[in-house]
Length: 357
Image (cartoon, rainbow, N blue to C red; front, top):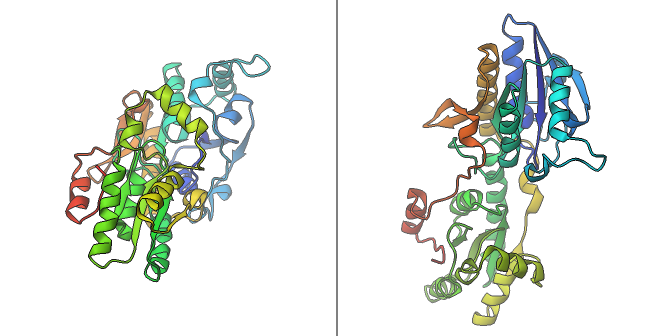
């Protein structure tokens, strides 16, 4: 008999159900007897012993559904070792609940912060296996995270719809795409939708270069410009500020986001009307795309095999089109950012896309 605990943590929800289903179906299709305990609302469920025993019926029909049947929450790693408001040691509470249920393994699905906590629990002696879930695609040790392609599809659709309006008006259109620290989502959605300018956190932009691109398009007879902007895009001037100075600037910023600040600067310097669209949390919702359903199922199946093989302390990743096992300690705390010298950036520039650098 194997007793498995499962939890989903973080803000992104696409393809979580598909991944969990992949794990469970692999276990149920083996000769091993299995009990599955689902912790509710991420690490909170493990801390406060909120769980339910799940059966095969709970995982039936969930492949196509977005969200997570277990619920999710953010439990920041930076405060995970701080006592809660009642003085409870959260790490010790998680360990005690793990042992109380006599679990053989804990399967954790989530992004960067989730993996830091999972690695901490692994170092504390728990058997842990993780799956890389984030629309940001910023987890170290894997070429792809599930949820990313679904979010790219949604963001691409949003920019595509703007094209229809753009073709009828001589304006600049800015679409703000999710991504505070990395620009994978903005880069891919921008390229897929034919954006003229793509601004991402890893490549600080010069507003003069952005203006030059807009004016060049106008001279060539293109009556509009579409700019895909990541939430965390930053100007070259702001990139020179210290972290403390930049945080202070953001705190005092009068604009809702960098996109509106950029829009005001463009309008003042060119006199051209600028419109901003923010798809926001739409990018995190909906039914997962077919690619993510297959991808998450594959990773889930490998996680199930790891459990059957008694191999713990790994994240199931994806490298060179193959599913791989990556040591958790190699993943936790590392960010996979877009390199300004990456081939995809160079190819985008060959296509005439401006990054403002």
